[in-house]
Image (tube, rainbow, N blue to C red; front, side, top):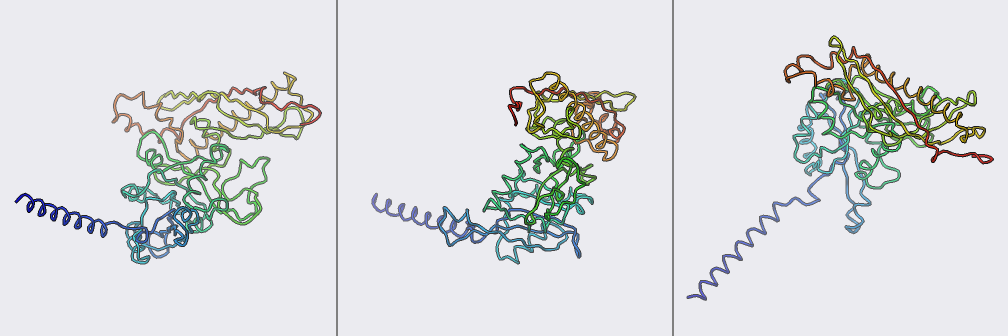
Length: 409
């Protein structure tokens, strides 16, 4: 009797295992059934409200699993639709595979579409359980589809890895700020700051810049780089609520990073106080966090910022003697005045021209209000456009990093 019970029990277990394994086999979606999106592009459509472009990674199945991811290629397809979800469903039908957003690294939105407002698209994507909220957001001065088509990485074979690494250049140039979706969304929904995004474009190799003495005054697509056309990111796109209202060039982006305590390293070029018509290149970093305060004078914001900068020499005229304390003092004073002027100009631009508080000064102002309703009734952004600024810069040329001339540099 016991043997019969054991046999019956064993048969039941085997049957259950067979059912479970069969169900799992049919329920699992293999790599051949999914289309992995690396980047999404959004443009204003010709026929519909939206033109949706997807950069899709296609693994090379002819190679081994260890190398296939290293040799994957990408294709860019576009479709016009009234919404993102409708467009993705149309892509599912067109591709014969299910579009999967779990590997998406970047969302590219054209300036034309961003000027109309993008909250609808951000809400849609963040509600998708597969979409990564740590994806970067780029506002393109050209159409988003072209940006994706020119985004084939020259030094990285895997497009997903390229999009993951490329934004980190902001840490050593300061020419832009790596902005991810969840950070942008947080600024969009709070009541004391305005969002920014990376500014991108296609560089054709022919400079469109104004011929300034420093490349940091360019924006994306303007730098005088010769070579094959490709995409570049430089500067920032500035938003008031969910609408694009303007842009910052590379140097203005450095000013933003200084005020918001996000600067890692950057290079600036100042007029030489020693040699007329000459310039000095300096590598700068924050010595301490910038201390900002907001005072309300008859409801008008009065904002002060105290900045401490450390610097080291990058290049200079060979006739400059850095062992001379007077020379060093002159360079520090010129650099301090230079930064003070440019940061002040940047702050008044965000206030008077763009009406966008991208440095979150509103967070300091909110302390003057006892309740949330009082703060919301005050309407910070409507008052930020009337703000006054005072900027103080303490500049320290660190002698231990200085280039000392010994018969030349």
